[in-house]
Amino acid sequence: MVSHSAKEVFILGVTHSGSTFRPSDWAERLAGVMSQFRPGGATPGSHLSYSPWCVPNTLDGKKCVIVHTDLRDEEPMAWSFVMNFAKDNDLQVVEACLLPDNA
Image (tube, rainbow, N blue to C red; front, side, top):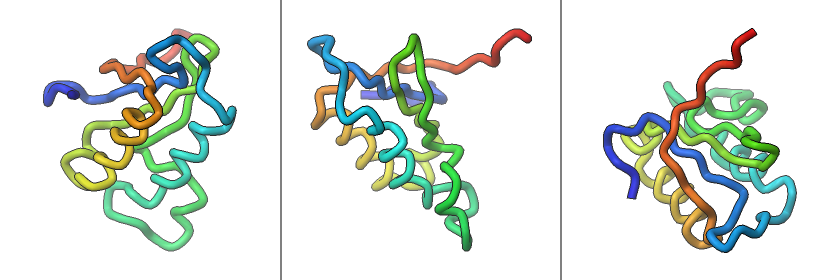
C-alpha cells in the first residue's frame, strides 16, 4: 500500500527475492502503455512520448519506473494497473522522491 503523502513511487526491476526482472526493456514497455495517461488527457501524438506520471529510469544500474501519485488521483484504473503489474510480477515498490543531479 502506498501512503497518501507520497508523491512518487519507484517500481524497481528487482523481485522481492533479489532477481533482476526480465525482459530487459520492461520499464520502457510499461511506460509506453501508460503514455496516454497524462495531465489534460491524451492528445494527438502524445503516444510518442512518456507520460510525466509514469517514466522509465535507472536506479543503481537497475531499471525502474517512476510513477507519480497524481496518476492515482486522476486515473485510478491506470494506477491500479501499474500497481498490480508490480504485485503480479513480485517487484519491489518503494516510496521516494527523485532529486536532480548536482551539476
